[in-house]
Length: 288
Image (cartoon, rainbow, N blue to C red; front, side, top):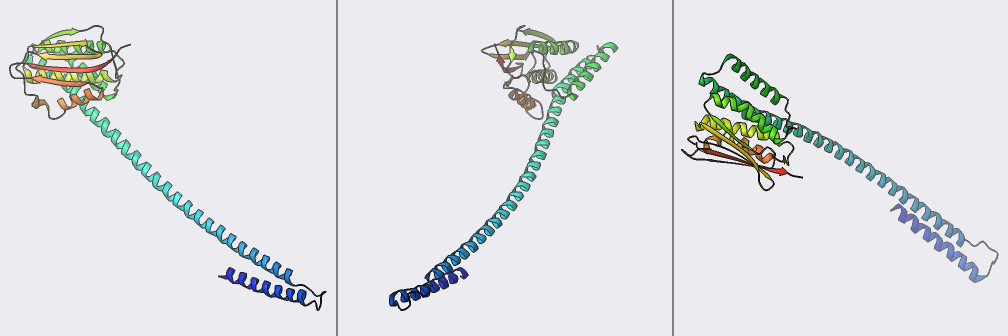
């Protein structure tokens, strides 16, 4: 409003001075008199300069205010993002801890639990000597130490892992009156998943433990072959069979299937009364 009034006043002054100058030029009464129209032009110029200056200052002040408001919003957004990032980090750490806890619990069940089952079978047979008892306890200690290291990657090839499994369980099964038939290709391919070794070992250990606990078998057969770029491992027995639903709960079969899926494989179980049981583990192979 102030700028408009100043412009209006300067135009009125310019009009008045212009009229005065025009009258002097028209009447020719005093040709040497002072012409005031240029003075009116100067007044109008100064008025425009004043108005533009005020508006420029106002625009700069508004821009500075908006900049400060945006800076405050950005600071608040940064603080909010920092809080969200911290929360996500906490959730990630909690998720990682839960995963590690679940992995350790699954390892204790699949690996240490299967060893304890085999040890119980040997103890019940009453054929353990003092030296064999010491060796058995040493095996359990070594297994527990291996689990405590939480190493999920086994650098050995599949043949070495299966050979170690055979060495560990054959003697114990023999003491329990169970014969182990072994039919494994000595040149099995490398598995596509580099972390599959420990999972394969745990799956087979738990499968053998389930046979010992439920099947009352006298013979267990394990075979491993490559078929169409996959490693097919089969574990069967001549026992009385059992209801697969009996191992569908808890950490047994669900945990075994979860392990198989984690390494890109698949695990199936067939069992029927008086027909024994058959475990099939199929894993992707990596052939050059």
